[in-house]
Length: 179
Image (cartoon, rainbow, N blue to C red; front, side, top):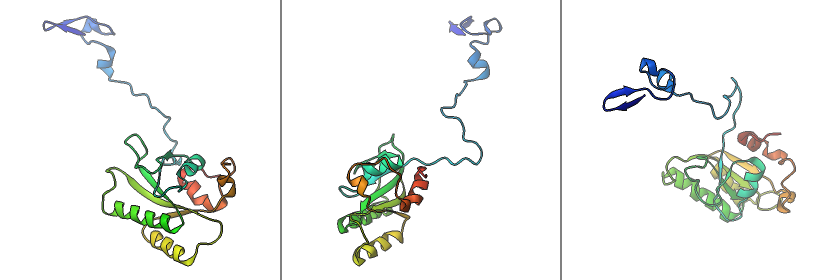
């Protein structure tokens, strides 16, 4: 219905003879779902932003293997998933950086709206961690969930096509990329 000088005028859409205007005014807007609704009981994995706390943490590799947004060493932007997985290598500098990033969240200094879900520690070398580094990992584990990623020789060579390591099954479930 078009209104001109206070008088209803017939316009496009059904109902002008009743003075009702376009059909949308009668029944309201029709919202089409962007995605089909999940079936009852269906698990829908959460999307994550991978954030590296040290150089060479493996953010791009993890995002390629497990899905999610590769934030590099920056905080996710407004259009990125707000659920954050902090990523660090298991060397001394990486573990210190992870502890510092946890402190940023604890003090409320992380960008508003971000949700820290876990820390992902990527092995910096094959084999067991030396005791001082293992002790730092325990400190991190005492405040947040930690997922460990072992040394993967094929990833070092750029081959990301195989199955994720068996030791990362919990991380694969978290990100919805389980076998």
